[in-house]
Amino acid sequence: MAGNQTSVTEFLLLGFPLSPRTQLLLGLFSLGYALTLLGNGAILGLVLLDSRLHTPMYFFLFHLAIVDISYASNNVPKMLVNLVYKKNTISFAPCIIQTFLYMAFAHMECLILVAMSYDRYVAICHPLRYSVIMSWRACPAQAVTSWACGSLLALVHVVLILRLPFCGPHEINHFFCEVLSVLKLACADTRLNQVVIFAACVFIVVGPLCVVLVSYPRILSAILSIQSGEGHRKAFSTCSSHLCVVGLFFGTAIVMYMAPKSRHPEEQQKVLSLFYSLFTPMLNPLIYSLRKAEVKGTLRRVKWKRRSI
Image 1 (cartoon, rainbow, N blue to C red):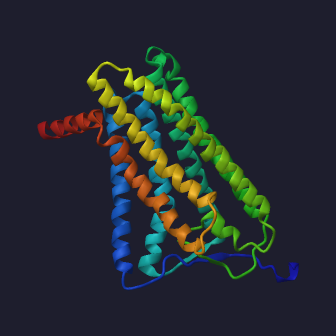
Image 2: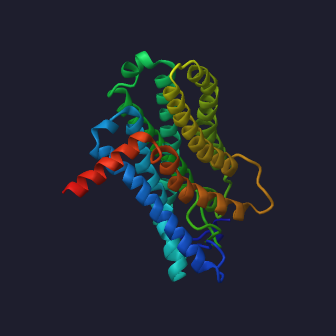
């Protein structure tokens, strides 16, 4: 077995099949990436500019926007370059780095969404204690924990990949170095890697999702007890937005890494990864932030200031 193993220097990303529709795909993906940068960049700028948005909820939205931009930028530019120049090779080291960043940002996003769920739970169910529980000491601690845990878990995945030998063919049937696609090229037992990926999904995805779903009946009960019609509307809007984002991100992750594979797992993985990497980060600002009254008010104030200058 050892005599057949070779030192890997690069991989070939098969990506999406080339066809007359490639230019259409290129335009669509480029537009999606531009909207991702624009929407999340707008959130970053508005939160920094307006002190009215210096609240725990927008603190976490700020971190979510950073993760979304980073997450999309890790995979999509390389895919666009491959579509334009049809040069689909990637060296071993950049491929492993891409895998690490993909896993790290995915884990971070899950944990930040959990922190945002907790923030909404405290705001609605314990409003009198909100400023004490979600203090400016607690919020940064939760954010740092999300970034640290996401990075450490991704490092575990990468270390387990690096112990594996790879012997040709070095063709990754994906548009980036997705962890499951990379593992298929290993000429050794990858069961430990698969178990760790599954365990990470249970810890990062299923567990937090169950906590979120269990907390929502109590949140709904608290919303229904609110006397003010405006308070009703605002609370429902916030919670429905959060459930949409959680459903998109966590649901896609469960289908990708925990659901039984279809007869065409590679093509399914590519479509789901594209949705995960491009469209979810693009939709998050629209679902969660840009339609909120506070953000619309900030946008109007920024426009008014620019006109007055």
